[in-house]
Length: 237
Ligand SMILES: C[S@@+](CC[C@H](N)C(=O)[O-])C[C@H]1O[C@@H](n2cnc3c(N)ncnc32)[C@H](O)[C@@H]1O
Picture 1 (cartoon, helix red, strand yellow):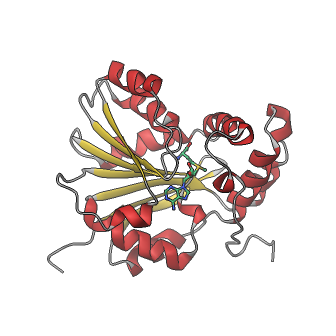
Picture 2 (cartoon, rainbow, N blue to C red; picture 1 turned 120 degrees about the vertical axis):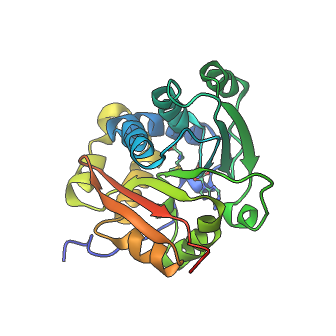
Picture 3 (spheres, rainbow, N blue to C red; picture 1 turned 45 degrees about the vertical axis):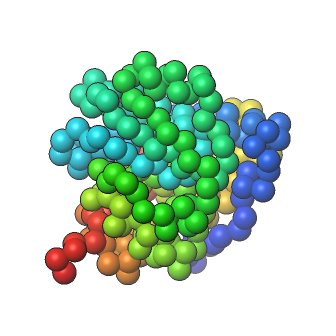
Protein backbone atom coordinates (compact mmCIF):
# COMPACT_ATOMS: atom_id res chain seq x y z
CA UNK A 1 0.00 0.00 0.00
CA UNK A 2 1.53 3.35 -1.05
CA UNK A 3 -1.06 5.47 0.76
CA UNK A 4 -2.27 6.48 -2.70
CA UNK A 5 -4.20 3.30 -3.45
CA UNK A 6 -7.45 4.98 -2.47
CA UNK A 7 -8.64 8.58 -2.73
CA UNK A 8 -8.24 10.57 0.50
CA UNK A 9 -10.20 13.79 0.84
CA UNK A 10 -9.59 16.64 3.27
CA UNK A 11 -10.92 20.21 2.94
CA UNK A 12 -8.68 22.48 0.85
CA UNK A 13 -7.58 25.74 2.52
CA UNK A 14 -8.43 27.89 -0.55
CA UNK A 15 -12.07 26.78 -0.36
CA UNK A 16 -12.31 28.28 3.15
CA UNK A 17 -10.78 31.70 2.31
CA UNK A 18 -12.65 34.83 1.20
CA UNK A 19 -12.11 35.75 -2.46
CA UNK A 20 -10.14 38.89 -1.53
CA UNK A 21 -8.00 37.27 1.17
CA UNK A 22 -4.35 37.98 0.21
CA UNK A 23 -3.44 34.30 0.77
CA UNK A 24 -6.27 33.28 -1.60
CA UNK A 25 -5.19 35.81 -4.22
CA UNK A 26 -1.59 34.57 -4.02
CA UNK A 27 -2.73 30.95 -4.20
CA UNK A 28 -4.83 31.59 -7.32
CA UNK A 29 -1.74 33.14 -8.92
CA UNK A 30 0.21 30.00 -7.96
CA UNK A 31 -2.55 27.91 -9.52
CA UNK A 32 -1.94 29.59 -12.88
CA UNK A 33 1.69 28.51 -12.73
CA UNK A 34 0.74 25.01 -11.61
CA UNK A 35 -1.69 24.74 -14.54
CA UNK A 36 1.20 25.72 -16.82
CA UNK A 37 3.63 23.22 -15.26
CA UNK A 38 1.01 20.46 -15.57
CA UNK A 39 0.25 21.47 -19.21
CA UNK A 40 -3.45 21.48 -18.30
CA UNK A 41 -4.53 23.96 -21.02
CA UNK A 42 -2.79 22.14 -23.92
CA UNK A 43 -4.16 18.84 -22.61
CA UNK A 44 -7.72 20.22 -22.47
CA UNK A 45 -7.33 21.84 -25.91
CA UNK A 46 -6.25 18.51 -27.39
CA UNK A 47 -9.27 16.78 -25.83
CA UNK A 48 -11.61 19.44 -27.23
CA UNK A 49 -10.07 19.07 -30.70
CA UNK A 50 -10.37 15.30 -30.58
CA UNK A 51 -13.87 14.93 -29.16
CA UNK A 52 -15.89 18.03 -30.08
CA UNK A 53 -16.61 17.42 -33.76
CA UNK A 54 -17.80 20.85 -34.88
CA UNK A 55 -17.19 24.34 -33.47
CA UNK A 56 -19.27 24.62 -30.30
CA UNK A 57 -21.62 27.52 -29.71
CA UNK A 58 -21.87 27.20 -25.92
CA UNK A 59 -19.47 25.72 -23.38
CA UNK A 60 -20.01 25.45 -19.62
CA UNK A 61 -16.96 25.48 -17.35
CA UNK A 62 -17.63 24.33 -13.77
CA UNK A 63 -15.29 25.34 -10.93
CA UNK A 64 -13.85 27.94 -13.30
CA UNK A 65 -11.82 29.84 -10.67
CA UNK A 66 -10.39 33.10 -12.02
CA UNK A 67 -11.08 31.98 -15.62
CA UNK A 68 -7.44 32.06 -16.62
CA UNK A 69 -7.29 28.34 -17.34
CA UNK A 70 -10.11 28.60 -19.90
CA UNK A 71 -8.53 31.76 -21.32
CA UNK A 72 -5.39 29.73 -22.04
CA UNK A 73 -7.58 27.04 -23.65
CA UNK A 74 -9.52 29.66 -25.68
CA UNK A 75 -6.24 31.12 -26.98
CA UNK A 76 -5.46 27.69 -28.45
CA UNK A 77 -8.93 27.14 -29.91
CA UNK A 78 -10.22 30.54 -31.02
CA UNK A 79 -8.74 30.47 -34.52
CA UNK A 80 -10.88 27.44 -35.39
CA UNK A 81 -13.69 28.10 -32.93
CA UNK A 82 -14.82 31.73 -33.23
CA UNK A 83 -17.80 33.20 -31.39
CA UNK A 84 -18.06 30.73 -28.52
CA UNK A 85 -20.29 31.63 -25.59
CA UNK A 86 -18.55 30.46 -22.44
CA UNK A 87 -20.49 30.20 -19.18
CA UNK A 88 -18.10 30.08 -16.21
CA UNK A 89 -19.44 28.88 -12.90
CA UNK A 90 -17.70 29.13 -9.55
CA UNK A 91 -18.95 29.68 -6.04
CA UNK A 92 -16.56 32.63 -5.80
CA UNK A 93 -17.12 35.67 -8.02
CA UNK A 94 -13.88 36.10 -9.95
CA UNK A 95 -14.79 37.38 -13.42
CA UNK A 96 -13.11 40.75 -13.96
CA UNK A 97 -13.45 43.40 -16.69
CA UNK A 98 -9.90 42.49 -17.79
CA UNK A 99 -10.86 38.82 -18.21
CA UNK A 100 -13.94 39.80 -20.22
CA UNK A 101 -11.78 42.03 -22.47
CA UNK A 102 -9.22 39.21 -22.95
CA UNK A 103 -11.97 36.82 -24.09
CA UNK A 104 -13.58 39.55 -26.21
CA UNK A 105 -10.37 39.91 -28.19
CA UNK A 106 -10.66 36.23 -29.10
CA UNK A 107 -14.29 36.63 -30.13
CA UNK A 108 -15.53 34.62 -27.11
CA UNK A 109 -18.32 36.01 -24.91
CA UNK A 110 -18.26 35.08 -21.25
CA UNK A 111 -21.01 34.86 -18.70
CA UNK A 112 -20.06 34.39 -15.03
CA UNK A 113 -22.34 32.51 -12.63
CA UNK A 114 -21.56 32.73 -8.93
CA UNK A 115 -23.13 29.69 -7.28
CA UNK A 116 -22.47 26.36 -5.68
CA UNK A 117 -22.51 23.88 -8.57
CA UNK A 118 -25.03 21.61 -6.82
CA UNK A 119 -27.45 24.49 -6.16
CA UNK A 120 -27.15 25.77 -9.72
CA UNK A 121 -27.35 22.34 -11.40
CA UNK A 122 -31.07 22.05 -10.62
CA UNK A 123 -31.87 25.09 -12.77
CA UNK A 124 -33.08 24.49 -16.31
CA UNK A 125 -30.95 26.18 -18.98
CA UNK A 126 -32.74 28.06 -21.74
CA UNK A 127 -30.09 27.10 -24.32
CA UNK A 128 -28.20 23.77 -24.46
CA UNK A 129 -24.45 23.47 -23.94
CA UNK A 130 -22.25 21.69 -26.51
CA UNK A 131 -19.65 20.66 -23.91
CA UNK A 132 -18.80 20.96 -20.22
CA UNK A 133 -15.16 21.49 -19.25
CA UNK A 134 -13.69 20.87 -15.81
CA UNK A 135 -10.16 21.52 -14.57
CA UNK A 136 -8.80 20.63 -11.12
CA UNK A 137 -12.32 20.55 -9.70
CA UNK A 138 -13.75 17.01 -9.56
CA UNK A 139 -11.19 15.95 -6.94
CA UNK A 140 -12.93 18.24 -4.42
CA UNK A 141 -15.77 15.75 -4.12
CA UNK A 142 -16.12 12.26 -2.70
CA UNK A 143 -17.38 9.45 -4.90
CA UNK A 144 -21.05 9.75 -3.84
CA UNK A 145 -20.97 13.51 -4.51
CA UNK A 146 -19.37 12.87 -7.91
CA UNK A 147 -22.13 10.45 -8.93
CA UNK A 148 -24.65 13.13 -7.92
CA UNK A 149 -22.71 15.83 -9.80
CA UNK A 150 -22.40 13.63 -12.91
CA UNK A 151 -26.13 12.79 -12.81
CA UNK A 152 -26.87 16.52 -12.77
CA UNK A 153 -24.33 17.40 -15.49
CA UNK A 154 -24.79 14.51 -17.98
CA UNK A 155 -28.17 15.78 -19.27
CA UNK A 156 -26.82 19.32 -19.77
CA UNK A 157 -24.37 18.60 -22.63
CA UNK A 158 -23.39 15.78 -24.97
CA UNK A 159 -19.85 15.73 -23.52
CA UNK A 160 -18.02 16.40 -20.27
CA UNK A 161 -14.23 16.76 -20.49
CA UNK A 162 -12.10 16.83 -17.35
CA UNK A 163 -8.41 17.38 -16.59
CA UNK A 164 -7.68 16.42 -12.99
CA UNK A 165 -4.70 15.58 -10.78
CA UNK A 166 -3.19 12.12 -11.22
CA UNK A 167 -3.01 10.27 -7.89
CA UNK A 168 0.59 9.06 -8.17
CA UNK A 169 3.86 9.11 -6.22
CA UNK A 170 5.66 11.33 -8.74
CA UNK A 171 2.88 13.92 -8.62
CA UNK A 172 2.95 13.94 -4.81
CA UNK A 173 6.75 14.27 -4.83
CA UNK A 174 6.47 17.21 -7.26
CA UNK A 175 4.23 19.10 -4.81
CA UNK A 176 7.20 19.14 -2.38
CA UNK A 177 9.11 21.23 -4.94
CA UNK A 178 6.48 23.98 -4.98
CA UNK A 179 8.48 26.27 -2.63
CA UNK A 180 10.92 26.57 -5.55
CA UNK A 181 8.31 28.49 -7.56
CA UNK A 182 7.44 30.62 -4.51
CA UNK A 183 4.09 28.89 -3.85
CA UNK A 184 2.48 29.93 -0.57
CA UNK A 185 1.36 27.69 2.32
CA UNK A 186 -2.19 27.44 0.93
CA UNK A 187 -1.00 26.20 -2.46
CA UNK A 188 1.52 23.78 -0.96
CA UNK A 189 -1.12 22.22 1.28
CA UNK A 190 -3.86 22.14 -1.35
CA UNK A 191 -1.64 20.75 -4.11
CA UNK A 192 -0.60 17.73 -2.02
CA UNK A 193 -4.20 17.30 -0.90
CA UNK A 194 -5.37 17.46 -4.53
CA UNK A 195 -3.03 14.63 -5.52
CA UNK A 196 -4.26 12.44 -2.63
CA UNK A 197 -7.86 13.16 -3.71
CA UNK A 198 -7.02 12.79 -7.41
CA UNK A 199 -7.76 9.92 -9.76
CA UNK A 200 -6.17 6.93 -11.48
CA UNK A 201 -7.21 3.94 -13.56
CA UNK A 202 -10.86 4.05 -14.60
CA UNK A 203 -12.28 5.53 -11.40
CA UNK A 204 -14.15 8.39 -13.07
CA UNK A 205 -15.57 6.07 -15.74
CA UNK A 206 -17.08 3.91 -12.98
CA UNK A 207 -18.68 6.95 -11.37
CA UNK A 208 -19.90 8.28 -14.74
CA UNK A 209 -21.47 4.87 -15.48
CA UNK A 210 -23.15 4.93 -12.07
CA UNK A 211 -24.67 8.25 -13.17
CA UNK A 212 -25.97 6.49 -16.34
CA UNK A 213 -23.50 8.25 -18.64
CA UNK A 214 -21.25 6.63 -21.25
CA UNK A 215 -17.49 6.88 -20.54
CA UNK A 216 -15.48 7.68 -23.68
CA UNK A 217 -11.86 8.01 -22.54
CA UNK A 218 -9.97 7.98 -19.26
CA UNK A 219 -6.19 7.88 -18.85
CA UNK A 220 -3.10 9.47 -17.49
CA UNK A 221 -1.86 12.50 -19.48
CA UNK A 222 1.70 13.75 -19.13
CA UNK A 223 3.40 13.31 -15.75
CA UNK A 224 0.84 14.75 -13.38
CA UNK A 225 -2.59 14.73 -15.01
CA UNK A 226 -5.51 12.36 -15.34
CA UNK A 227 -8.12 12.98 -18.02
CA UNK A 228 -11.71 11.86 -18.41
CA UNK A 229 -14.23 12.31 -21.22
CA UNK A 230 -17.81 11.15 -20.83
CA UNK A 231 -20.87 11.33 -23.08
CA UNK A 232 -24.21 12.36 -21.66
CA UNK A 233 -26.88 9.78 -20.87
CA UNK A 234 -28.52 8.40 -24.03
CA UNK A 235 -32.17 9.46 -23.78
CA UNK A 236 -33.24 6.45 -25.91
CA UNK A 237 -31.98 3.92 -23.33
C1 LIG B 1 -8.48 24.23 -7.57
S1 LIG B 1 -9.56 25.51 -8.05
C2 LIG B 1 -9.50 25.36 -9.83
C3 LIG B 1 -9.99 26.57 -10.53
C4 LIG B 1 -9.85 26.57 -12.06
N1 LIG B 1 -10.53 25.46 -12.67
C5 LIG B 1 -8.40 26.61 -12.47
O1 LIG B 1 -7.91 25.69 -13.08
O2 LIG B 1 -7.74 27.63 -12.17
C6 LIG B 1 -11.16 24.86 -7.67
C7 LIG B 1 -12.29 25.88 -7.83
O3 LIG B 1 -13.52 25.23 -7.50
C8 LIG B 1 -14.35 26.15 -6.82
N2 LIG B 1 -15.35 25.37 -6.07
C9 LIG B 1 -15.11 24.49 -5.06
N3 LIG B 1 -16.26 23.91 -4.67
C10 LIG B 1 -17.26 24.43 -5.45
C11 LIG B 1 -18.65 24.22 -5.54
N4 LIG B 1 -19.28 23.35 -4.73
N5 LIG B 1 -19.37 24.89 -6.48
C12 LIG B 1 -18.73 25.77 -7.31
N6 LIG B 1 -17.41 26.02 -7.27
C13 LIG B 1 -16.67 25.36 -6.35
C14 LIG B 1 -13.41 26.97 -5.97
O4 LIG B 1 -13.94 28.23 -5.64
C15 LIG B 1 -12.19 27.07 -6.91
O5 LIG B 1 -12.23 28.25 -7.69
